[in-house]
Image (cartoon, rainbow, N blue to C red):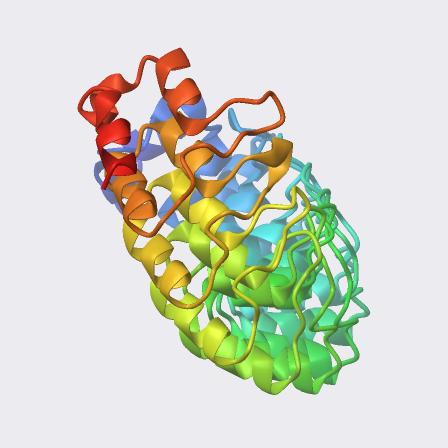
Amino acid sequence: MDLFRRLVDNSEAVSEVEHDMTGDIKLGKWTDLHQAVYSGNTSLMKTLLQHGAPIDGRDEYGWTALHHAAFNGCLALVKFLVHRGAPIDAMDRHDWTALHRAAWNGHSQIAEFLLCRGALTSACTSCGMTALHCAAANGHTLTLQHLLSHGASQDMPDARCWTPLHWAAVSDQAHIVELLLSNGASVNCTTSGNMTALHLAVEIGNREIIQLLLDNGALHNAEDAVGRTALSIAAANGHREVITDLLAHEAADSNRVSALHAAALSGHLQIIEVLTQRGISVDVRDSLKMTALHRAAERGDTTVAEYLIDHGADIEARGWLQKTPLHLATEKGHEQTIHLLLSKGANVDATNQWNETPLTVASAQALEKCFGLSGKITSEMQK
């Protein structure tokens, strides 16, 4: 830092730099050259390099002066550093290059310059992201076009097997999704969780992106690692219009996680209404043989439970371990749901796999309080 301080002391042009670099900037963390890059003072940079300042010196995060110049969008400084031998593909502590930094912030001219000087489009960060991932995630069209024109792989997976298309879809970047698809990006690549771009677009409810993906051959019935289709994901997130769009494309339910179950588990009554109006059975079973009524009773959603019962749900359906909805509501202590089920005729003598009735379960769980003493069940039986 001594050289920098001496230059500051002896230069009116640099005297402003020290003032500008107060506040949140920690001077002790940077090399002299970093300070000069931050100030934008090319003359000072030249002087520092002439006095032997290392052009590839690192700050505490492993950033070189070129990283800072690229990140801040200083094309003139980037050119200055590169022309004087700054290593273009130097990586910081997390393996980000200057191209990554420029792409993340959408500095398209800097990205183009670095690419023309040989920057690697295939360089990956510690989490496997290329510069194309960075541009796609942040919606930087021009930067992305430059990267594609220089041979960047649009289907390159990151550490979680996310491609740039996945990043664009989850980031609400419809124009990037369209651009990638028009350039031949694979629409059905899957992440490590077996999610396609369609799954992610449905998760956030972006109908424009969903339509783009469907129009380009997205598999609308593909299941992710836990068995969810686009339809069940839309149901879980309460995206009513997306549900309608998917059904128009003949989207089907999953055998493991149905849309009706997903909606019941999330308490989305409007979604349940849409699904039942489209003819989906209220008694469809999930992988544990549970119905949507089981799930509503388990979470104590009296409103959803009542709707399902009123639309024909089997109140005595046997699910996992031969439990009825009343067993589940009792186990969880959902008093209002218990009263609803009893008022709708639920059998209090129904036994589960261990020959337990709901009253037995209540006693075992010390949940008499939920019933207002266990005698309340008896009084209900006598009505």
